[in-house]
Image 1 (tube, rainbow, N blue to C red):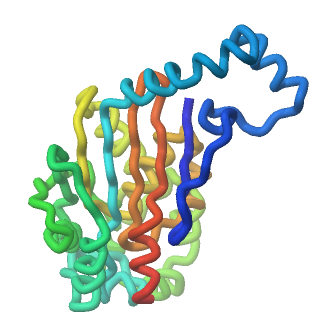
Image 2: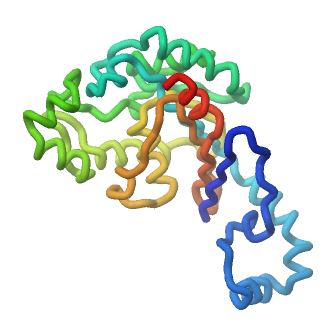
Image 3: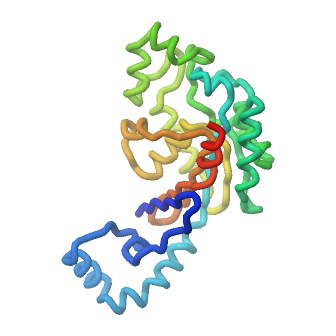
Length: 255
C-alpha cells in the first residue's frame, strides 16, 4: 500500500481523517460501511486503529531521503550538464537550504559522483560518499550543448528523447535505463537504516516512478526543481512517499 503525504509551506500539517490515515480514498457511504464490516465493525475497527498505526510505523525501518542538487550556470542556461561546478549563486542557495534541514545523526550520507552534487552535499553539511548508482542521466554527445542548439540540429532526436523513455541521446543513456539503475539500487538497500543522498532530477524522478509504480511514460511528466527533496520509506506494505515542503520554497526565492 502506498501513501503520499504533502505539507504546504507555512501551513501546519493537516489533521488526517481516519480514512486518510488508513490509506483509503474518499468513498461512498456504501463502501465505507463495507470497509467497517470487513474490519469487524465500526467500534472494533476504531479501537484497533491506534494499534494498527503503531504496528505500521514500527515496520517502516528503511528511510531514504533524496535531494536534487543546486542549480549552476550551465543548468540555468539550458545546457546539458558537463560536470561544471556550482557557481556563487548555487552555493548560496545550498547554504541557505542547509539552515532549514535537519538530518538524523545515524543517516548515511551519499551523493552522485558529479561535482555539482558533491558541492551541494558539502554545503548542506553532509560528509557524503560518492555512489555511482545516483549518477545523472548520461547525455552522451549532448553534454555541454544547449537544448536550443540541439532542437535546431536534431529536432527529431530531441523530440524522441523528451517523449519516449526508451530513447537516448547519441552515445548516452535513456530515461528507462536510469529507472532500471535507480530501481535496482533502491531494492538492494538494507532492510533497515537511514540514508540521505544528494543527486539529480532524473534520479528523483526515477525513484518516484519506482516507489509509486507509475509507468515510464508518466515518469517523464514529473518536474523536479533544484534543491527539491523527497522521502521514501519502505515497509512490508510497499514504499511510502513523502514530498518535502522546505527545499523547493527555498530554491524558489532565488529564481
